[in-house]
Amino acid sequence: VTSPDNDREKFLAAQKSLEYVRDGMVLGLGSGSTARHFVELLGQRISAGLKVKCVPSSETTRGWAEEAGATLTSLDDSPWIDLTIDGADEADAQLNLIKGGGGALLREKIVAAASERLVIIADSTKLVAQLGKFPLPIEVIPFAQRPVLQHLQALHGSPQLRLGEDGGPFVTDEGNHILDCAFDQIADPPSLAASLSNIPGIVEHGLFVGYADVLLIGRGEQVDVIEVNED
Ligand code: 5RP
Image 1 (cartoon, rainbow, N blue to C red):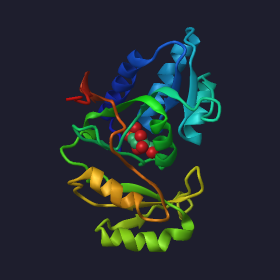
Image 2 (spheres, rainbow, N blue to C red; image 1 turned 135 degrees about the vertical axis):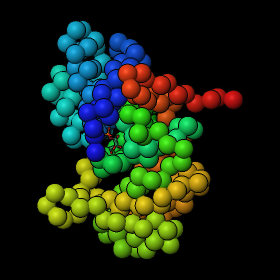
Image 3 (spheres, helix red, strand yellow; image 1 turned 120 degrees about the vertical axis):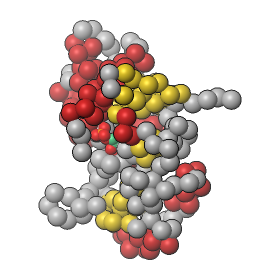
Image 4 (tube, protein in one colour; image 1 turned 90 degrees about the vertical axis):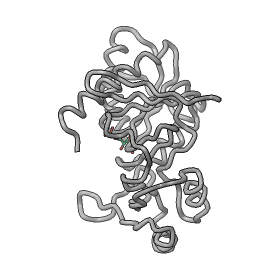
């Protein structure tokens, strides 16, 4: 739930991320309400003459980008992205992330992997000491849903099928379903990520390990900048 304060923090983080944008870049556009702020602010820069090409990470974001007057491209035409700006559901100080609250994790991870740099924008509630309170979204091929559910139960993920507004299963942009897994505490994100990637039928999971380069966290009227320590 976004309180007015959270939304202000999201806006400020999005505004700060514009400092990373350069003329001529191919940009990846994330999904979610924080990314929406970024797309709207980017639109103002585009109106003022900025030239960029954008790869949206969801059909919803595609709509916002069109409204903002952005020039769109695809991974077919622009397989290398200079910079992606995206939100997150949780982030830790090592820049591990949980994403997929909006259901766009598969395309978001593909876009992130194609990006030279990934800048995450978020309000202060998203920065946590340990990932896992937010249920981890896992995108699954419908055919494999039952066996994947059993694998996730064995991993103590308490998987729940995400439902859409019509009461049926939520369907992603790629036609898959989402199982939200309440792990509660994820002590070792790389290890859990590897285990999940080994389960046939899981198309992708929302643990982003080693993707983010910078976190911009809105905190009151400030924005904290957290970067990967290269040492
Ligand atoms: C969508 C995402 C979003 O980035 C995440 O859910 C954060 O959303 P918001 O900016 O609305 O808090 O991963 O799949």
